[in-house]
Image (cartoon, helix red, strand yellow):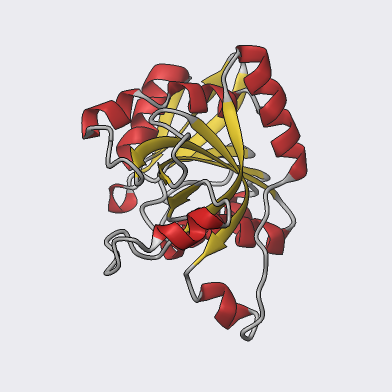
Length: 233
C-alpha cells in the first residue's frame, strides 16, 4: 500500500497498462479482461487486475501530466515490482497526414517541461522507449493488420497554450503528435531499469482542428489497446 495506490503486495501484475483517464482504465478492464478485480480507488484513480487470454495484467489510471504519471510509475515500480509499463493514451497530431484514430508508437519524447532540466542540472536527457517492447509492438500491429506510425512525440506541460501556433516549430522538426506524459514515464523507467512504451491514438488534429468527441475517445481506442495487450509476456 502506498500514498496513492491502495493495493497489497501481489495485487498488481508485472505488466501494467497506463491510461490517463481512470474511466478508460475501467473500460479496458470491463471490455478486455476476465475476472478483473478493483485494487485501487484512491482519488478515484481506478486500478484493476485481471486476465487477458490467460495472462495476468493490470490497468491503472495515471491522471494528466508528467508529475502525475511519475507518481504512479514510481510507486508501481518501487512498491509493487512492476516490470513493464505501457501507456495507452490520446494525442493531438502535428502532421497533416496523421489523422484521427491512427495509432502512434512513441520512439522518444521531446518536452517543454523543466522536470528533466532540473534533474540533470540543465543538461538534456533524451527519454526513449524500450527497444524490446517497441519491436514487439510493431510485430503485434503487423500481425493484426493495424497501421502504425512511429517517431518522436512532444510531452507538453500545457494543454491550453498562450501561443496557438506553438506546435508548428515541433512539426517542422518531424514531431508526430503532442501529449502530456511520455517524457516522464520514459525517464522513470530508465532510472529503475524497467521497460516502458507509449502507444497513442490520435484524438485531435492541430493542423485541421478536427477532433473526437468525449464519447468517441472512449470507444475509438480498441486498436491501441489490442496492441498493448499483445505485449504480455
